[in-house]
Length: 375
Image (cartoon, rainbow, N blue to C red; front, side, top):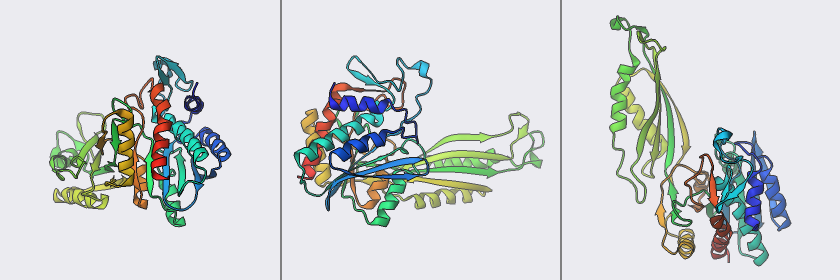
């Protein structure tokens, strides 16, 4: 069994359902300390964060990952225990195998090999891990980034190990992410009997034209490699459960995934102007999940493209697709960010898995990137 597979198995054995780290970061810290890294544990609330560094000064290259996983769901639906790693037909199965304990294990092995081969490398190489990526993402990298701002800690480049590949390891290089903005809209009405609508005010009827306008609105035409901004309604709830009662209140959940044309504050103002134009009595709670980020051409993107092309035998697709990642908290520190990881077909699913061959290739991939950036 190779070193990276053995470590990935050790991590999968720890049932680190968000925000519980279940000892993963302590295991990793002990390994990296033996390799000469300085390790700092940053715990906020119930969340563990690990900051491990080697070297000093600029440039600062950070490998970013998370040790928490989503719940496994019904264990009887799995073909093997989600927290007992098992290799079948060339695949390593277990919760977190692809998202992202496999990448974390590869990070650790790559870092150990790099500092052994280059003990006096230029700049600083670091590993940042959190146990709050799959959860609320409040006390994880978001809080660490705030700490870094206070300290004046600079980051030049960040490589996130999220599972980004689509069909083959290295076929996609993620060079940005859309921003995410969520809303909980409550529209007030007056409850009453459906036979006497003149004595009530139906918030569903009142809200429909405004929601239709928001959903139909074309926010923009995209931005470079970003698709157009999209608003999606994810939940609508009203009523008492009786079909003869006009509800007194309507609750709507919606989300905007937006490109760098926008900032969250601008989108909030635009949406609320529509709601006011329709004379709704409403309250709205906004949650800013993260601003969009985009890495332009430069040393990081060039090095990543070259390494992935050599690995996959073809130039990777450069994309800003997908949901969000913790890189959204690192990019505002002035860092250029890319995401490179294994195939994402099974993430968050029953029987999550990663190809053993891909897992074994990842440490060399990450080490090659580090060596290109910190010679």
